[in-house]
Image 1 (cartoon, rainbow, N blue to C red):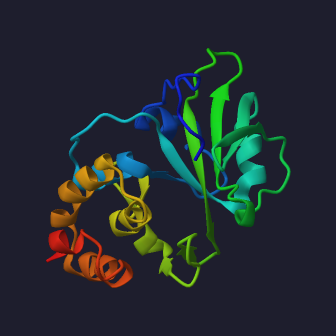
Image 2: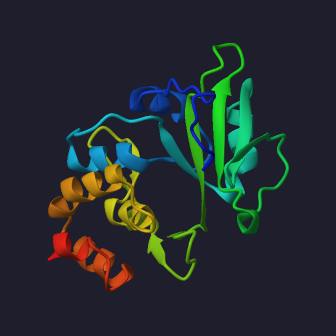
Image 3: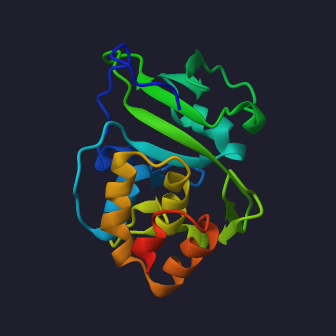
Amino acid sequence: MARREAVHQWRPLSVDESVGLFRDAPFRWWVSGGHALELFAEDSWRDHDDLDVGVLRRDLSALRTSLSGWELHVAAKGELAPWNGEPLDVAKSQNGLWCRRESKSKAWELEVLISEGDATHLQYRRDQSIRLPWNEGVLTTKKGVPYIAPHLQLLYKSTTPRPRDHEDASAVIPKLSAAQRKWLASHLPATHVWHRLLG
């Protein structure tokens, strides 16, 4: 993820605006990050700097078509570079796109997080041996909004947790099902502090 210094102004879309943007998209998409955890918990406990939406790497061409008229930049290793549709390589940490409408202000509005997967499973990008069936990896709210499953999102947040990630874990882990708690516990390092929350 590129650094968010003062030069990087954000005016993120709301979840409802993202739903409107991708409602007719011909590819899988889902809300990610802290917003996804709040959709799961049906609660809100902190402010958010951005809005994250997940898509599969294989669907990037269709995403670019859907965001015609937007300015898209690859965010990799702390740097931003314009993206013109060339293949993005997971080995080069090209796993995110910052997006803004060219006709609007220069504030960034959306971050697309690029995931791996196939027709049947969503893969954990940092260890592709970790796979979840789609109906377990992406859940849906009562209003039909898709979001990354909380235990998978927390696994992403667990690697280098920031204060807000600990806040998210404290709010969400008590709400996980027994199966979700067991799954997350089995994939965290034995010494990870979140085991205290998982019991």
